Length: 429
Ligand code: GDP
Ligand code: IMO
Ligand code: MG
Image 1 (tube, protein in one colour):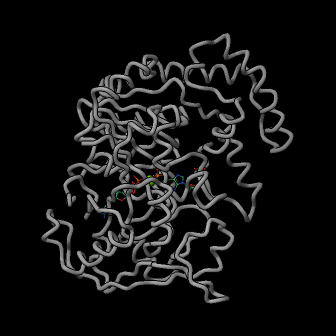
Image 2 (cartoon, protein in one colour):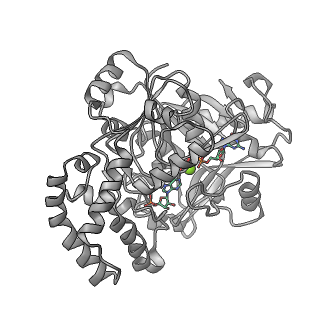
Image 3 (cartoon, protein in one colour):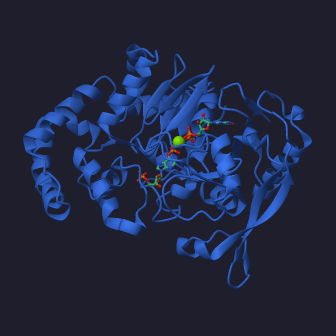
């Protein structure tokens, strides 16, 4: 297998984890390159469901190195809970100690980041983003303001104290005077950071440069993205986005390998679209069809439990996503959700509700999205259970017509079709 990056091509939750887990079979080294515990990644193997937030979705294999890269932000409390839940499900702690590694350069989400995520959202009122409240925005803000705390800082107590002496008074001032929240004492934070050090110690990889050097020379690398292109801080529906770069270009930076190490970028698309949180969604269905997709697709957020908003596949967004996401091949998931639909729609353009103007190119000013309605191409459903089909040839003709249209419209080959949540409910085309 070529070194491949798995990119969410819509608004997140496309089934990236299922695809990462599948491709990881042929990889040696799996690197998560951005995001934090805002991600909720599900892998189902022989009916058993595993939920990941920070741990790369390749961890279920015996001998694969799973690396949490420099571009990721880590909320230690969430990391601890995630490991405990997986250990309760039967994965041995020793397995993590052997296979899971964390970059010392990854930034830490501090308690005050969590507080200010909630407070920022309250402040935005009607314009809120609907974040996961996992401190993602505030952690990345501090990283870029150069006042963040990195995993490696935990291992140099003297320097860490000095850093805190500068950072904490300002944080406390904002917490108490702007947000009217409780400030933190230095002792409180230092004791937390001691806990975090003990938590991360078995996993921090200080010889990561050697590890990467070896991976680039001798190993197959799989890069795992979180979120999706339309949630990208630069290319997404700003400001209704996350604070990192899920696009394929983000993988080189977040993993520390450079663009030439990436040979294929597999964009994961659902056969329809979902969105959690606020923000425009031109093909959203606020009717019985939307509810049917939500129910049949079991569309609930893995991290927050929120109901996902649902709508038809948006080709305008998808074409844009292929372009800026750097996508070179496609995995199409959840095709089986349409098994009982009479017809399936695919948005090929936007029509301005006032002027009637038709556009095919994605409008980046999201305030304008509310002026548009979708123009659809309609396909006949197949009215057949496809969840057991293993070969492309055996798919119903109407499903093949829909898939061919997706390929032609996006001028990109579909390599994987997913017809159920389980590992083996997959068609390699
Ligand atoms: P991710 O964040 O992109 O990894 O996706 P999530 O795990 O948040 O959401 C995808 C959901 O769809 C999970 O519950 C998966 O188990 C499930 N899933 C993935 N592929 C398929 C599929 O082809 N069919 C069905 N019915 N479910 C799927
Ligand atoms: P995975 O990796 C879907 C959304 C939030 C909110 C916006 C900003 O499972 O696909 P944040 O907490 O990041 O500041 O929230 O982004 N969001 C996701 N939506 N899947 C995700 O991750 C998401 N991570 C963040 O709902 O709208
Ligand atoms: Mg998810």
